[in-house]
Amino acid sequence: MHKIFAFLLLAYSSNICTANKPSIKASYTPDKIQLDGFLDEEVWSITDKAGGGFIQYEPRQGIPMSQKTEFMVVYDDMNIYFGVLVHDTEPGKIVASVMERDEVPYYDDSLFLAVDTMNDNRNGYVLWTNLNGIKYDANVTNNSSLNSQWDGIWDVKTKRTKIGWQAEFKLPFSTVRHREGMNSWGFNLWRKLPRNGEAGRWAGSRPEIRTY
Image (cartoon, rainbow, N blue to C red; front, side, top):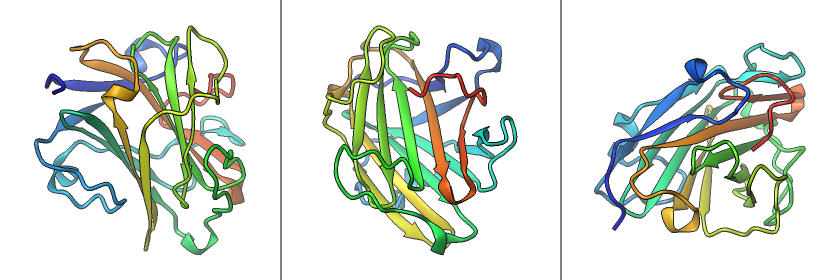
């Protein structure tokens, strides 16, 4: 059983001043989370929500993206879950072409989640998906480049909605290296909106910020 503790996720980038890093509190639930992309368990409705106007780093650096993105974080004794609401005023134009695991959905509408479980800006894990629910993953060790040979045990389910789409990620604590009892992890979330040529993230708009 994973030790229960107050869990904070801080914006993950060494290029952001500590005082300016946003954070979100993860909510503990003793109840079962059904991974289906619906995000309809009670805990999702009462947990903190972050995001909104993600900030572009391409093409209009520092300007909010044209579409809203919100997310929530929940955990139980064994896993941490990320629920993402991907708003889109033109849902019929969402691009989702990639279908295979470890194929990069670079030209798709997609979400790119990075977690620094040691909160040291040197080690981390990347989880990437699109509306098809594909899984691309990689890790970073000692500030190296992305290692796409890493295939971790995790899952994601997605769902098309009237206002866009949503994704539900499940990352077992046993999949990642972390310090037992540590109450904060680094975290960032990217969104790509290809039809507008937009790429943005929760925190940090400078293009040179590392993408993990």
